[in-house]
Length: 190
Length: 180
Image (cartoon, rainbow over all chains, first blue to last red; front, side, top):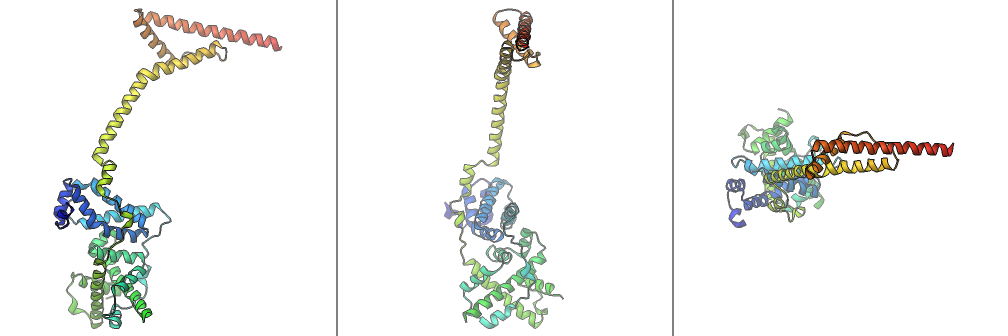
């Protein structure tokens, strides 16, 4: 049954889901669980809170399934709903770590081309991940939304309630920050 | 062009939203190429990595829905609950609360009055309603006129109050003599 849905076009899955097909709902969960969870884990900085937000987002999705428009951007819609739930959770738990620290954006960052000038063909995935893990939560969240969830800067801007130009500049600088982390890691390795 | 404008422009070119690559300076073009390489490296890294979703294990949206109540069913449950509460309250007030509640109150007053513990209370609205109820009940049972029976019950009640009141007065007078 699940196999029947796994290769199905998203629009078809959404139409079936809207018509009350529970397996279509489970397929959407399978498709989006990881991406939405990764975003929530970065935004909340807490995996349990992230799991609660993801569960609540899917539960709400079930309740409003007959209002879902299969021709609209479902991914952005689901991410936005989960993001809002995370923010509600952070506001409720006042001592929770705020993910919205963008001070790194203003730092003097190295140029990305230096990284490749020094290390082309020497960068391994393991090192990329080590550098990603060292990024501030706000930069990691942008990376998750851009590279795992494959959302455009405009869609990310809508989710995070930021101007699209701000998101574009932050994505650019998040990569610069990552390049800086990678360079330090690779220099340490040498 | 300030830094932010330049950075946004490079991001726009990277996203394929702007076709101004030829207008970039040599430095900017080098920077763009560096971002392109890192962009594809990150795309590869994220698409080939699994997210550890351990806290989500066992969660299946539809199972949770069946355990709880989705909105349409919740409405039905809420409506049923309201009907049950209204029915129970009606039953309580019609058959339980009014006669028995007032009956218990009257019995307590009567007991207190007869024991001389307190002055007989003035008849309250609820007590009158109780007498009316008794009149209707016993009237229909004994085939007597409810009005007549009501008058008799009122008189009996008032008389018992008067008797009790007199007894309290007498007892008080006796005690006063005893301790004088």
